[in-house]
Length: 113
Image (tube, rainbow, N blue to C red; front, top):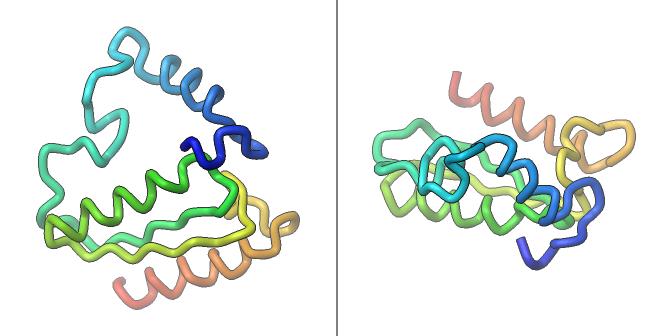
């Protein structure tokens, strides 16, 4: 979060605002609904493909979640898409690396479904 605190599209300050809006009076509670990394167990989960972007304040959170899943014995594949920004996958016409990410998502799902 600190590495990209003032990133394009999403800043750390905005993330805190959104968290307050989402959690309301429960803000600050260690709840899985605020972040899946806070779940009491990550064992037995299906394989996960976690995408991160170089210019996203949530980038480090993706790495932490992937490691949490792996530690619990779940399969987690982490892929970083620099020079992506937060939400880059929804912008394939603007952020060229989004096309590669979309292809990776399709391939991941095709292998497992």
